[in-house]
Length: 232
Image 1 (tube, one colour):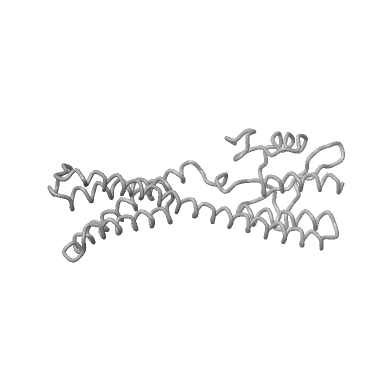
Image 2: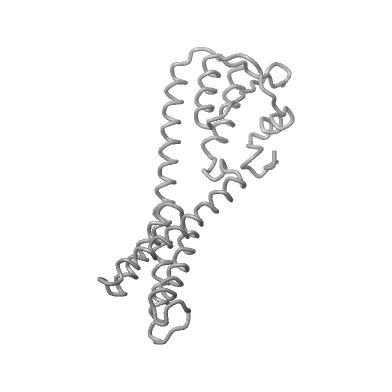
């Protein structure tokens, strides 16, 4: 039944190209990446402090502030918003601790430095947020370009398909390459039963038929990254 096949493809395509990049990232890996980003931010701040100790004899304190702000921008560019906020706070504390009299103390002898710390922190957070925003927009544009390319290649492959099997194999190929995972295609048979399409490599994969049945009947996605059974 070609109509049933196209209905299945429509559901699968909506699941694929309507998903966001965050849907593919697990909670555990996100936490690990956040910890690594914070660790790198702390290490970069320490490196900048050591470099500033070496530059201090020949540079004014205002120039050292610029070096610290550069570090915040680098952290925001590669690791995002919150690590850059952490870097901004650490940089202000490091500048106060190592380069403002009395050294090795958070006490301030000249109250004018309080304004310097406030402006340094505010500018660092603003630069970090702006840089992280540009980074996020670039990532979104990259994913949109990738989805558009997959759609174009998939539609070009489907235009050359002559049989139901060709359509199914072409769809499975592009869905698998887009998800970077094994893909199962279920086709409706006589009596409304969904039957798994055997791929070119052969063999059948384990599928929750109840979820597949619900998704096919409702025309809605279900499973991880959706509002229906997100924990599956």
